[in-house]
Image 1 (cartoon, rainbow, N blue to C red):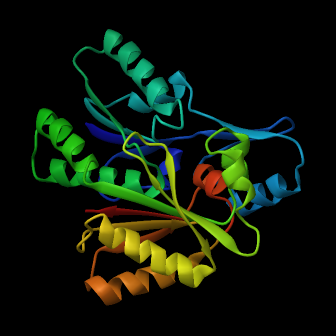
Image 2 (image 1 turned 90 degrees about the vertical axis):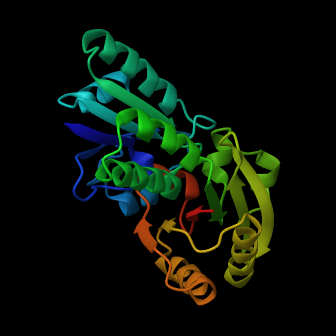
Length: 275
């Protein structure tokens, strides 16, 4: 049996026609923890976190949770959140070594997305597409590395608080965001860290800058996947504008699950595209 597995930052809860599973990360404060399962009430979690004045943090999946997900499959493809910001890729790698020591006949490919959310979705879809074409494990493993390099990720956030307190972005940069309707537009660097691109005042400027950056990166009408944190309105505006410019493109919008909601925060948008 072939199985595709991702950590919960991919934002998918299921995937059509392919055995698919997500391994959850955990969101915590010193008082309470939330496992990023498909049925997690994200709105409730965000309400709690906004009212909580102590520290909050996230934890990558345990090695055992990966091992449990591997069970029953002969050919496994794992897609993880960027190793530049999380230990999830490393924990999956440890699980792979342990599993293969007991099941040497199993084939396991672990893909460091150098991304999150929509970027991971595009990788998952590509793996499923290649397997549907009858590609071998070796062919898929090689092709997915090349495909990953063709992807680009952007995010538009109106708060960087959780990223800053967890050491993912500079606190000085974070302090200027969220004031006077200022948003940060950023992108994933080649090594999967966060690169700020511009500060934008208001959604109109955010839209203009996203379109400008997408064009500059070489986008010409490939797939686009967008996740949002309680901001479907802006996600739809971006989608409409992209379709006006590039035609009837393959574009899908999904709400963010727990992990991406924690770091992107309310109002946040994350966009992944094929160049």
